[in-house]
Each structure stands twice: as structure tokens, then as C-alpha cells.
Length: 318
Image 1 (cartoon, one colour):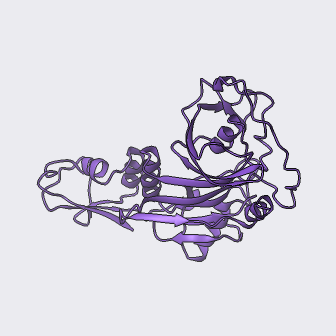
Image 2 (cartoon, helix red, strand yellow):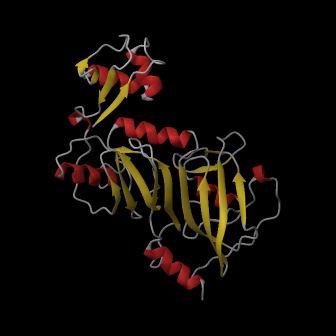
Image 3 (cartoon, one colour):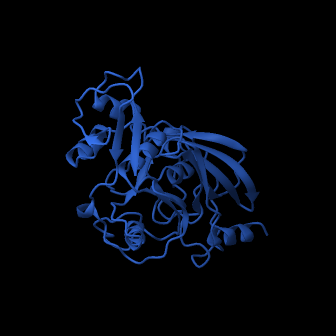
């Protein structure tokens, strides 16, 4: 798996490093890694990054380097593959599974599952999550197969050109057909996991569109402009429409002071939506649109709404 660039008149006389950073869009960190493993070539021969290039020179980067010391433990865990090629693998994540190993979840994660999947194909690669989802959020999740693909996809997110859409079912009926929630989010004092609305937090913007009004609930499409931890969940709680089944961010006892609004939407319980029907927040990553790292063509991925959320919708439509 290689990246190539043919030097033209405009870039003739530049250094190899200039080509790598400005034409191939490689980070300083990745350039150092490639340099260390001798994976940077000019006309098929190893080259120093400070060397000067000439017109028609072919600068080539070999992305297939040794990562055996960085492997996640392979585990045979079923996965639902939406799309896979040499750049990345996209899954339809099931709820209840952690994305990446942590101190509290060292095994049994999607990263372990993908490591096993790649090992079966003879691919020894580090697992690199691009889109991260909470343990109990389902839907599209992407893992890059090399650092270049990871950087390329994350750059699109930072540039806000990577479209991510979610579907959620919230308590109560939303009045507006669409809107934007622009409220900063920060880590909640005294908690490692929880987030809350705070004037001192990081900017967080969520756009929403009502898809269907139900009995004491609303089916909503969310589009993220930023990607803060628990963003949709915190924003839904803040406006008085928490996601059904969300035990971390249920109805708040009082309006958040940042909202400057003393009126608060009457809560409902929807107690008939039992854990046997839905035992997690009703949130699903349903669509992603972005440029492919190698072809540079637009790619659209979709994941259908899962069975537990379908069951909730059927009940709420009665």
C-alpha cells in the first residue's frame, strides 16, 4: 500500500519533506515513523527527507511497515462489517460493546475483534479507531488500517467536512421541526465519565431534525458539527428531551443555568419501555459521508436502525 507523488514544475526544487507535508499531507509524526523504517523513496530508492527533488521525480511512501509490537490481543468476537478495503474497515456496532481496550475493559472490545479479523487474513496491523461510539450507542464505527488513513479521516472531522448523522428517540414531543443546540460541554466536577453544560466548556454544536412525532416521544436525526464526549446525550438532557433509556443523562432536576431558561419541560417516565425492550440509550449512528483516503472519492455508509429501537418505535406509534 503506497502513496505516490510525481514532482511537477511548481514543486521542483523543494525538499522531500515539503512534498510529504504539503502534497501528501503527512503529519510530522508519521514522517518520522516512515523515515525511521526507511519507507520514504525517490525513484524507488531510499531518500533523506531534506533532499531536493527535481521535476518528474517520483516520491513514494510505503505504508506497509512493522507494527507487531503495537498489536491488540486478537479475540474471536462477531462483527457486522459494512465496508472494508485496504484503507479502513467500517462496522455496524452492536450496543453493549466497548470500542477500545481500557484499564476497566482490557478485553472483549471491538478492537480485539478487528485484530482477530485482520489476523485471519494475514494482516498484522495496529487497530486505529477513527469514529468512537459510547459502549451502548450502536451504528457506524470506523477503524483505519494505517496511520495515513487515520490522519486523513480525522482531518476531515476537524475541518467539518466529515458528515456524521445519528438517529435517536427522545422523551416528549419536540415543538420545532429542526434546530441547533449550541451549548459548551465540560467534564463534570468530581467525575471521570460524566459531562455537563458549562460556560467554561468546549464549544459543542448539534443540529437536529424531527423525523417523526410519537406518543410522548420524538424520533430525531442529529448531525454533529463538533464531536465532544457524550455530546448528543448531554445536549438532549440540557433542552429537556433526554434520550429514552439514557441512565447517565436522564431528566435533570432543574434547568441548567447556562440555558438561562427557568421553564422546564414536564418529564414523563415511559415506564412501559422496560429494560427487556431497551436496556440502553436510544441512539444509533446511522450515516457517514466522507472522502476516501486513497481514491479521494465521496463515500457514503449507512447502518439500518437496530431491532431494539424498532421495537420502541412500534410501541410509541400505537
